[in-house]
Amino acid sequence: MAKNTVFKVLKYTFLIMMAFLFLTPVYVIIVTSLKPLDEVSLAEMWTLPSTIDFTSYTQAFTELAPNFMNSIYLVIPATLISALLGAMNGYVLSKWRFKGSEIIFTVMLFGMFIPYQSILIPLIQFLRTIGLYNSITGLIFTHVVYGLPITTLMFRNFYANIPDSMIESAKIDGASFLSIFRRIIIPLSISGFVVVAIWQFTNIWNEFLFAVTITNSGSQPVMVALQNLSGSQIVQWNVQMAGALIAAMPTLLVYIILGKYFVRGLLAGSVKG
Amino acid sequence: MEQQVDMNKKVATKPHKKKKRITKDHLLAVSFLLPSFILILIFVYGFIGWTGWVSLSNWNTLVPDFSFAGLKNYIYLFGDYRFQADLRNTVFFTILFIGAVIVMGLLLSALIDSKIKGETFFRNVFLFPMALSFVVTGVVWQWLLNPSTGFNQFLEVFGIQPKWYTDTNILAGFEWGSIEFGLPVAIVAVVIAAVWQMTGFSLAMYLAGLRGIPEELREAARIDGASEFQIYRKVILPMLTPITVSVVIIMAHISLKIFDLIYAMTGSGANFVTDVPGVYMFETTFRGNYYANGSAIAIIMLLLVAVFIVPYLITNRRGDS
Image (cartoon, rainbow over all chains, first blue to last red; front, side):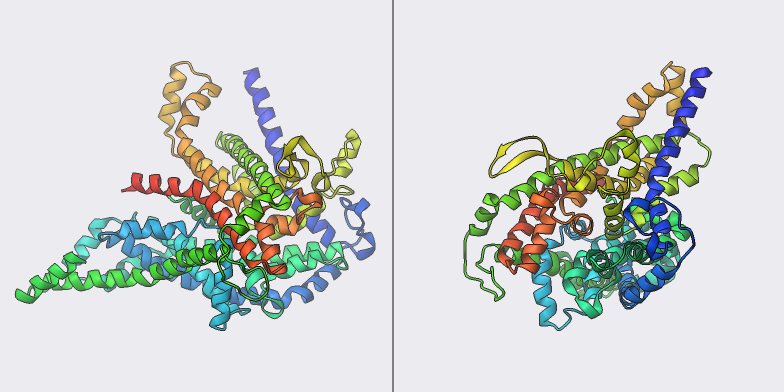
């Protein structure tokens, strides 16, 4: 019994210490971003602000606002289109398998793991040729294409849970491929769409490599602008922290509100699902 | 294809309503999938081929030059100080990162699964960094691990002042090619930030795995007189092996292609102590216009990832059907 109590104390001590460690960055972001400029110094990193000052937020917001909007214009269509295509592919790959469909699926899956550096140079040449380089539309297109493997995988695994007998009896009743999709599959995929949409939203919002290479100046998404903000020597530290929080807010909010679905997406993305 | 032709034939000679509908539906099914598949073929496989071709060309200026250079760019890279440093850093980053993420995930999931108070709170605290961008992580940890502030202000009490990502020491180093091979101390700082962000992934995976293990199994082991620790080691850990494999593969591919975290947090570092192929590829291609060299780096990165991913995909897909 005594041994058990000791173990319990150790367990909670460890967990609480870890929790503190994991929350330290949040503390630093919030504390620093609320400090007035004259209190932002390396020596006083951990101290609380004497007065709460929102200047760093207004300053960071004016810097990031246009890019923040770019990210919104990017993430909404890219998420919706890639989710819809994923649902279509997943439907076929789970309920209308044909000879070779499994191979097609595996071939598509590989696209999920490639380092995007290995397609970046041709992609940029291609986008230049069709006039979509340095545009949000070009980025939307890019995220839709390279999002296909993961959305297809997620929907395929999701639809695998819908019993085949349901589809079969609908077929016997004379329902066609399209009407089964519209009347049975889509209504049953609401939570699937939520999971995939959250996953895509988070990934596209947070993505940096495509963003920094395909766009410059006017059409850059918020993560590139944040990186530029922190990279420049003149921008104060409290403004950087406020900027980081502003840029992280949408995905953080999604996680806080719909965390359950976020975790489900994370698990679904691990191939087996 | 043959089958479809065959079916059409039957329909033509002996009209049968049901058969005809199935054929049309199957064509529709293929037409649903085909656009995506073609996009993947072009934009993944075609473009990889294109990059491979660029990597064998002389295009190392602003103006495209597709004249054949053979393996010149690869030979250059493997003799290059910076690229050798990148390979070294990638090896140590990958090993430390995967090891730490697995250990943290196992430990935290076991504790969270042991019917604790505040389970939801702890789970969310360890999981939320997953929702952040590597850029945000990089910006914040750059300050936390800044040698003149951050954690060092606490460590001062103990009289230790690590130089974190500004440390240029190579631990247990020995001459290898043109670099010193050994653990670059600076990479540890980047690993800490990456582990902070990705522990949630392995934690969630292991938690899902633990929840899938029936309580009767532990009960049976307990009746056989096994201690909790023994149960964990002998019963539960082996059952979690498939999850560990998935975590290792997914973390390995993230670590081999890492770019944004390092770019935002430290950059290449002095003497390239925190440089990785992803950063080198970006800088040499888009800042230096060495397109052929950049392509060669990208192809090497792809091959490194493929070593992990291809066997995983093949065995995984086989087990599926």
